[in-house]
Length: 604
Image (cartoon, rainbow, N blue to C red; front, side, top):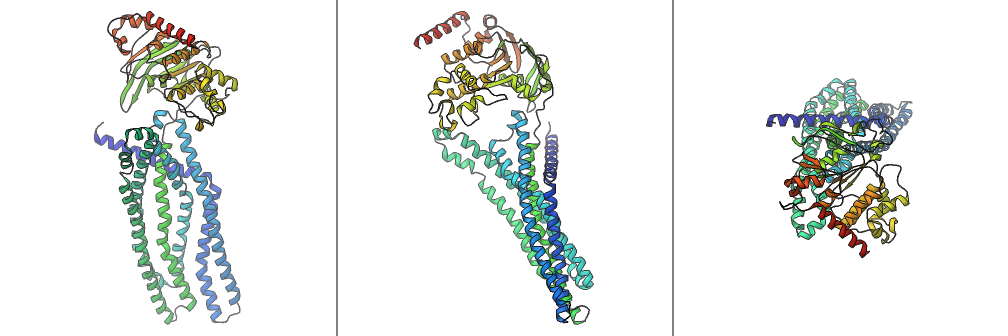
């Protein structure tokens, strides 16, 4: 792709994200339509009261100066108008807070739902720190937009109504005010442009700093062991000066606009007062009308106060675009089909091709793994084993081709059927739940009972160390420090507890010692629900025990067959396991495995 094409693609993506952000804000406003309407109604009512106040006050003053009988009644009307303005402002603030909270919650739910429904590699586009910032600070700022728009719209009513009132009171005082209006318009336009640029830069630097901080927190032990704390601190804070610069620039734009509008507004008021005084001396207007004209000029000049509402809208839209980057993630959709009953779990890959960052990672893979078989996926690092495992159980979809389980394409299955019958165990599992028992039971409903949880833990070699914890299976995860191997065993137990007709073990025994790994393999064959197994294998014994070996090289299936066949006839296959070019006897290796198993049993 040429640089111009890349720029056009980036602009297209940015435009798509901007459109998604605006649609999300509209959806958030609709979600609180009643409350947003209440905010708008209250702010418009308060604006109308503010508009009525100078006219009522001026007329009441004229009546009182003339000692007219209606003077006290108009004075009471003045008090009522002022009270209405105060009460409506308070109600708008209350409803505005509710709209802000509901809109923020709505945006967060939408973004989180999309994040959890996308394929893991799409979710990994954003670092955990960036994702947290998008879901928290930026969603909060974006959630203020619906109420801010209502306030900004209502804020336009007093200036526009005040100019109209000035014309009704006296044309010359109105013309005196209008001389300065073009300067106010130019001021607001420049403010909107400069604020958008500075806010966008500030939020981008904020995202990157949050991402670096999260990375450092996740690798705290490595940093401590390497003695690089100062270097990491410098890396995390490297863009802090830029953040400060953009923050200062943002407030300089706001402060400069406020200062210029503050200087312009008194000049407009003095001009109206001067012309109004001349008209009063000429007898064209009365004292009350002059008072009203000055008050209306103040309201009309208050168009500069719109900058506050405008700034909130600009900041919120910019923040919404950050949050909308999550909303733009593609959804891993599901169908309505269910798997046929009493089928063995036959897995078929037909012309599967996967592309990442413009490069093909898996090339036209077509094969059938018989139901109930154990298939070991082997290959050198970077051969595509983990991606093969992800495609096999639909953690991601291929760019071309399809994957079928018992004759049903995986995208056509319901989410419940897919995750109930397809399970995973990973090399570095993340444990979710309050207690150890809940971590093992975590997964698709219906969950396993206590007996099934303990049986799965025994099969994974985890029961012994779990029972030694202070509260056994009821021990809170935070109070159960575990080694990498113990965490991996709990991850295996979780997969075993939810084993369906297809179970994918993605290097899930890499942290286990050889004896424990073989005990797990033996339990997998004898104690776990029968079904098809895909094992991403690095150990020779795992490949030797499998019914079928799928040998990957550079994203292609180089060969399939039994371990014995490949070992005997493919020197390059032996090299995958670091074996010499000589041909060791595979059966002797298996015999050594059996002997070690026997020694283990005797030791117990």
